[in-house]
Each structure stands twice: as C-alpha cells, then as structure tokens.
Image (tube, rainbow, N blue to C red; front, side):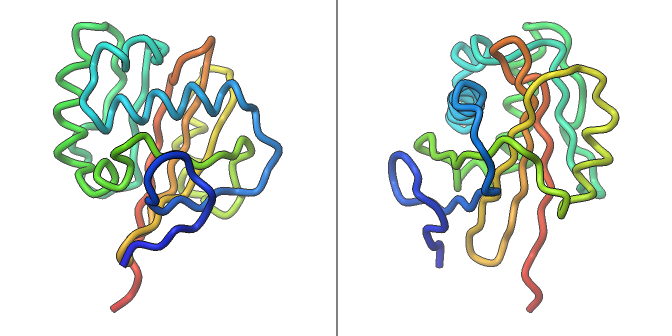
Length: 158
C-alpha cells in the first residue's frame, strides 16, 4: 500500500523529503521537469532542462544512463526512461514532488554519482516510497533547468 509521507501538491502519492531550507525556484523547476518526464511531455521537458543533461543511477544494469547534449536526443532518452523507471514514473504521475535542497549525507551512492558532474548549481533531493520500494532522487538545477537526474532505488527485505 502506498502511503503519504509528506505534504504534496496534487493527488496523494507518497513523497518523503529531506528536511532542509528550500530553494523554492529550484524546486519549482525540478517539479515541472519531473512532471514532464513522467507524462512523456518532451516539449515542456525541453523548456525545463539544461543541456548537457546527465542521467545516472546506482542500478547494476545501466539501461538509459547517458549525457544528453542535443535537443534532438531528448525524446529517445524520455522513451527509454519511461520504460526503465516505470515504477518511479508511475509514482510521480500527476506532477507530485516533495521539496528539499540539501542532499542528505545518508545516500553516499548518490554522492559518488554527483561527484562526476562538473556543472555547478542547486542540488535538490527527494525520496519517493511505495509498496516496499524506496527511491532517492537528486536533481541538479542550473540556469533555470534540470542538468542532472540521479536515481537510487532500494527494496524492503522480504
């Protein structure tokens, strides 16, 4: 059963967040961007994205990980991520997003991924939980667009 973990905007889909002072503008960009990805809305996605854009996960199988440098490559990345991150996208349908701006030190796996990105901006971190699956996601917002999206997933034992 999916449970509500934080106050969210829209329908009740679970989202827990790191408690931190929020950069409201960066959160708004990340929210708009995630909503566009989950809906497969490439037009809106391009308006809330900063190229080059990096997608990376802690998964052992690296299906859609890449750095997208050209607008023409965004649609193929969206198609891939909608399939490979189907559960995460399902949990975020309707544009649900929690807020935080300081990445937690708990998720060291994401720290390693973030260290590979040389761009400077505001990092936003959120956790999304549902039915024994826990996603921790980080967004790097640069110049009003999402420049990186990092994903870690854990499954409850049993």
